[in-house]
Length: 114
Length: 117
Image (cartoon, rainbow over all chains, first blue to last red; front, side, top):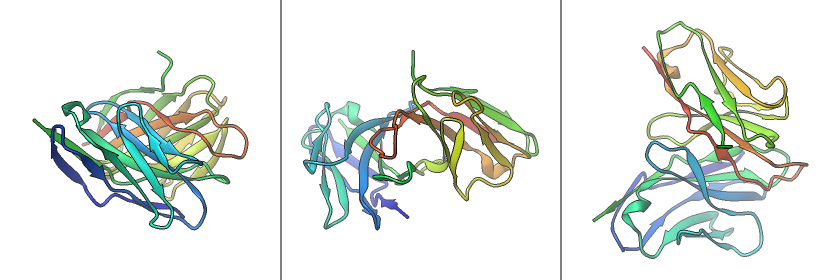
């Protein structure tokens, strides 16, 4: 079975500062990894995903995440955050084949302060 | 708008009553998922369908829960004899993956919030 751990339930950070949201996963088989974002009163949206190839993936709004197989991590980073990045961020994992179930972490609430 | 649609958005009910939620996925998506999310937690997997076939169910889905997707399009999630512990946001998602390889992303609806008094 797969599992996801997001150790930080809340991360406050000042605007224009860098941020890292941590995600570790556990799996005995190969996996795909995802970051979803949930803005207040909205549904979850895909932020970025790792399927294969380059271990560094980027989103259109400046976030990036790096797949580290040896450390079983997929941390999310942004060099300079904006107030509009305030949201809940969820890391998720799914197997590459055999089942299409996605397992989510408990989420990290990012609060960007002015 | 051709996103995932869920109804009703909010439901308040008394303990012991039955409730039903409906999900209309993106039209060409063959997979449909139900998740439950409680405050401070991530989405918890309940079940998923490929077309009309229910392929996997979580142990969280007790006998009081039933989900259907009769024609491979919309889906319903029914909770019978609701309990206060059923209070949560019920999320529906769909994806367009085909074949045996999982390569896609989930497209979520805005959820149906259930409050059991």
